[in-house]
Every structure is written in C-alpha cells, then in structure tokens.
Image (tube, rainbow over all chains, first blue to last red; front, side, top):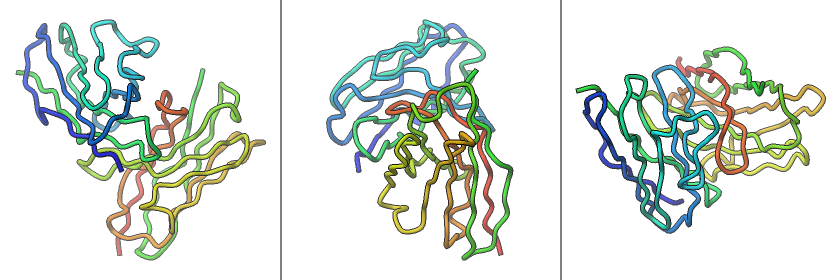
Length: 107
Length: 116
C-alpha cells in the first residue's frame, strides 16, 4: 500500500494567518490526491480533489498544489471555522490511503 | 440534495458480526461507487472497500478481504457492509462515502463498539 505522511502533526496559528500543510506519498500518485477537513464527531468533508481542484462550495482561501509525491494544502487567511483536523488521501491506487492528519489549533 | 443516511450504533461481542446500512437519496444510485471507511478513536480514516452499485462488483482492502462484505440493493438505493469475526480492535466509527476517486458525500457515521 502507498504510505501517506503529513507534516506537521499539529499546527497552532492565529485567525488571519496563512498556513501550509504538507503531504508526502511513499510513491508517485501523479495528481491523484485529495484533502479533507474533519471536525469532532463529524464525517470528513472534501476540500480539494486531484491535487488542486476546489470542491464546490469550499471557500477560495483553500488551495492545493503538488504532484508526484509531494503536495501542499494552503489556507490563505485562517477563519475561526477552519480550526479542525486535515487529512490527505491518495486516490491513485486501490488502497485509498489517508495521511495521519494535521490538527490545526487556535493560538 | 444528496444524502447518505446510515443505520444506528451497534454494540457487539467479540466473534460476532455486524451489518450496517447506508441509504442514499438525491442522485442516481447506480452512477457512483460507494465506499466504506472506518475510523478508530483518535486514528486516521482507513479505507475498507467499495461497491459499484450498477454492476455489484466489489473491491476490498487486503486487510479486510476475509471478513468484510459489501452488498447493494438498487431498488432500495441502499448499500450494506458486514464485518464478521469482530475483535475489540474493530471498535470504530464506520462511514459510507460516495465517489469514484475522491469521496464527495459521506454518511453520518455508525459507531460500532466491540466489547465482552
């Protein structure tokens, strides 16, 4: 299976900050990478698919980039609603592996 | 609007089986794959398998190949997952999710607790 590794595991930031989360794959997934946001007690919510495509209804402050084995999720100006856990997921193989998550906390 | 509504929480003893339903609405049931993903407390989501509701074809994670089954009922627009030989490590929230590669709609989750 493809292994997905995110960094950092925890990130503390202020409202208004620009933050970036990195996801690395153990082998190339081309552009088949998705990002999800999850809040406690809720299902994951799709934010970005195919590395850089914004899901309908997701605010434009979220953006994704990368290809191959290295990807980033950027939030341009953090809003109070953005404090949550973020997961990357590879979409290139039959394992659909998720990263271990990045918990974004209010500083 | 697209909705995936799952059945309620379950408490099972080790060695038992559990079957969870995922009732869909708001889209053509046979047009999108349905996946099952589980998430143990404090852990990352873990993909288990998927079904093509149009053909009934399934694909399972190797980890769950022996104990996991996904079925679909096109008339009821509902997918089911059954996990057998439950162990305490199977305690988790189980989600159904729609999509071919990315999972754009999710059920609300079903907590399965395995305890003697």
